[in-house]
Amino acid sequence: MSGITGSKLNIRGSGRIAKLGTDGQALTSAGAGMAAAFEDLAAGISWQTIETGSTMTAVAGNGYWVDTTSNACTITLPASASVGDTIIFTDYARNWGTNGITIDSNGLNYQSDDDTFTVEYGTDGMTLAITYMDATQGWVPTIDEAVTDAPSKGNQEGIFGFGYISTWAGMTNLVSNAGVVASDVSAVGTARVGLAATQYGGDKGIFAYGTTGGNYVDITNLVTSSGVVGSDGASAGTARGENLGACSFGVDEGIFGFGNDDTGYIGYTNLVSSSGVVASDVSAVGTARNALAACEYGGDKGIFGFGYLAPGNDPRATAVTNLVSNTGVVASDTTGVGTGRNYLAACSFGYDKGIFAFNGYTNLVSNAGVVATDVTQVGTARARLEATQYGGDKGIFGFGYASATNLSMTNLVTNAGVIGTDVTGVGTARREMGACSFN
Image 1 (cartoon, rainbow, N blue to C red):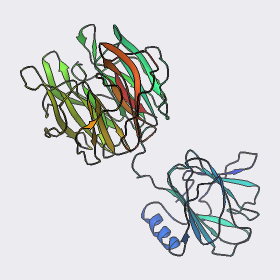
Image 2: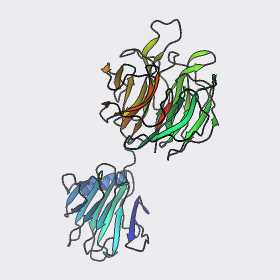
Image 3: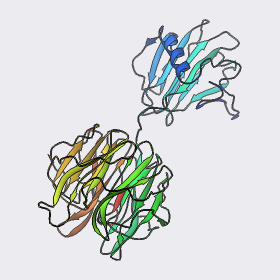
């Protein structure tokens, strides 16, 4: 390792930065070198129970899983040390980027600097190993690395947008990381209905397609990582609407699929790049249909499911699904599980699972893309709603239509896939909108 890897060493009160990893003091490199060094160090370490407090005192020879989910943690090192003493700290819940750790060297030097320094680490997934060298150098980091190839934690916030009131709507409503829906934000893009939305780029979103004034459109509106909706942009795909589906896949890409265009019911798809660029049409693989839903599963894959078949089919409501690989390839039809229906919604939960719900039932999706049988619906029965994840591993269904009335109520989904009872609506009641996560 050379230079700083997500760590900082600040003088108290002055703000000067002193680099870690200089003068040969950081002894390992990333990747295999780190793994080998960690294995050697950890062989003689006694691992302790998970630390969750805001303060703790470390003992030489121990390893500590430090969980900062609820609070930052100040760690006091031993007041005396012998050459070769080693302590290891590991980010238990990958939360040090939000709530970091502070090292109090307790009168001894830390990387040659005295105890007037504040030593802070604030990178998710980090493992920090320190060894006492001598009185001059004091405690020295020998491993200071973050594991970057962990499963995605999911986006923290969401957004509902557009839809139909008594006419086409363009306003949006943000969803906080606690699942609280905010009041209306004035429209930026063209008001429309029957569109879809998906995240892309890891922390951003995109609304696309829809119907306005009786015409299908291929308009897109990008959503920044802070939830700001951009002005209209043109899509590369064929204009369409009628409640198509959209979800993300891979690390940072998305896909729109199915719906209606001027020729009727369709099955083709359009990929969204990591920079939010919509690609041209990809030939249909699955059965053409509209009024379906889509969500992520397995951490990097997607699934389109259910919907409404073209006239002449009996029954017209279907439960067929189509899996999306982590490279955006849509698979052929999978025989439907659960009651066929349309105008439902779907979102991911628990980091790697999904849920289709409303218009009668819910159906969970496993992390292998297997759709479960029907579960009796909780919450007001309704159709033409939308859903998105929030809080990293939870979901929210919102708005919709029942008994000839537009609704604004929401239902939260736990990280175990349990749908909650109705939450009083915030925002203008409407239907057939889009929703996605960001941040």
